[in-house]
Image 1 (cartoon, rainbow, N blue to C red):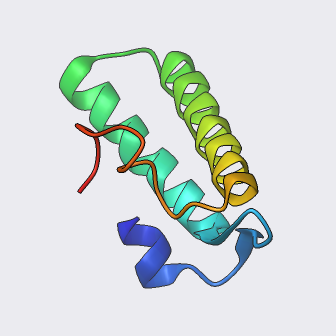
Image 2: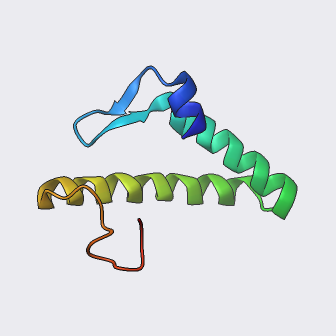
Length: 82
């Protein structure tokens, strides 16, 4: 989010999630990879795979929210989100 908001110019999926940018995805991957490698000593391939599936899952739920016509899940999941 930090990289995408500060440097994001090229929108990745404007019809699904209009504020997500390629720069944000790449910056998020770099920060996640750096943190996981340095702090947890996790293998880089595992981190990239987990990050990729996390991004795919995020886009999937954005599609679901659009089809249901809701802004967020906080009303559906009472203990999640504010």
